[in-house]
Amino acid sequence: MKNLIVMLLTFVIFCGCQAEKKETIICNWYVRYEADAQKLRAEADFTAVNEEKKQPFSPSGGVAFMGSNMSSQTLPDGKPRYSYEYTGNLP
Image 1: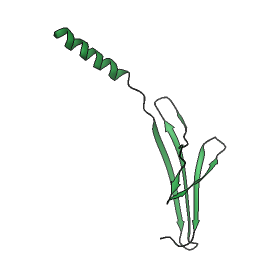
Image 2: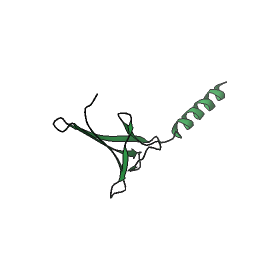
Image 3: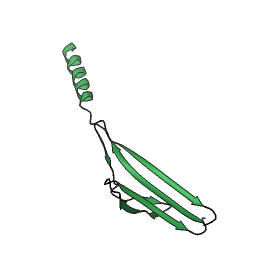
Image 4: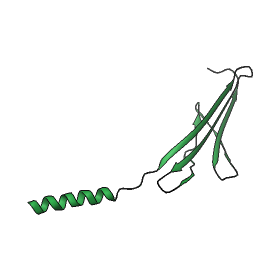
């Protein structure tokens, strides 16, 4: 019985050490509303970060703001930036 407990603890500790490294997604949002011009502009970019490196991230389904798809543009550093512009009365 004692050997079984030692084996189970060894297995649990070993499995815990082999856990996958998780990736964190960081999103930078910029939203600006100009009341006089009734113009709204939103921009977003994403970075995937893990313990080893940072790299640009592009969501597979695209990005939406206020229910509309944002257009994508690739910056000179290779990072995708998403943008949305709206002119008119806001709900």
